[in-house]
Length: 403
Ligand SMILES: [Zn+2]
Image 1 (cartoon, rainbow, N blue to C red):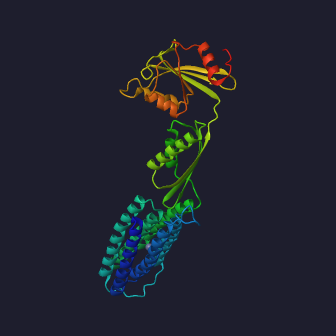
Image 2: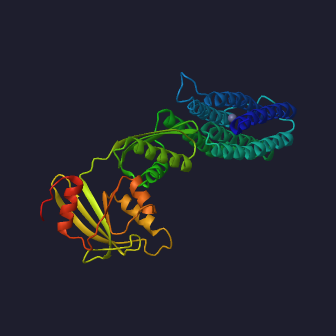
Image 3: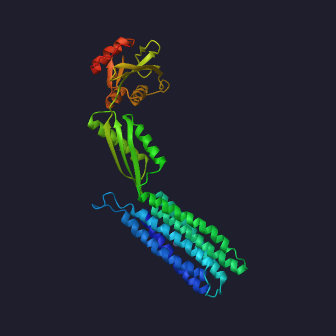
């Protein structure tokens, strides 16, 4: 049996027990407020049965409901919100307006009953809310909050009875505080279930996490759109990404990799639909590892070179946009410098890497090949404008304007 089913079944049992217990003790002690509390427990029995049925339905998927019936959970939460409001109304009516027709013969027994019921529901509510959070079930969480309200209701009964016994009438003031608390609880559940029913966005934190996972993939150059919505315990995600390849098989593989990573890091996802489009680039980026940054001396050791030289060319205007030298951030690491540097270049969207070292079969070659990045082995020691002009023409068939 699934945990949510177990919790919902247990709630039915607890509520039936409370109903029988309160009802018996109400007649035994002659307490009208205990009787009112028992009548409320009878509605709790019904609501927990509805909860169990609803959770069972929400787990189904069929041809008529291909997205699942998860939202039944949110409908149940909505119903529970109204039951909480009703419980609040009952408490207020009981304290302010009830005429006490029954004769309270055994006040101590009535107080003991109310306190026992309060303790049971109070501790049980924590268990239910905890399980609901673990299973990401909005209906179970709402049920737990409802049970906590029931504990408060029993507390009010105990306070009222004690007050009468001691001839202090404090229960009216206590009730006003409690009513405010109940309104807030009911409102929170109502708001949250309506939000989900109306397809509100998933929370910002998860959305941010999603963006991070996607952009950390080196083949993604842009996120056109990423949206998500909740449905019961589950999340649905949709997005449109710009991938740095024109190869459909490769693009598909990139999307698969991202989907897998998202599923690994974010739980309770039902479906992820990611569309992709090839990135249309306006610039051509050339990079080379340098041993001398001022003279643009190309290093013979790819991963260990202290500098990286970058040349960015505007593809339509055929002119050099920038020439920059940055330091290699991976010179200090022990192993796998070459791969790290290659990934670094790839993440910057490099199109062509100039090198004097041959990568044949080494780590960097795998990185570049998998990202569709061209590598050109050159014999020249220095990179100058003439060399760039020649290479650019060879690689793109375009003539670069002389700066
Ligand atoms: Zn209740």
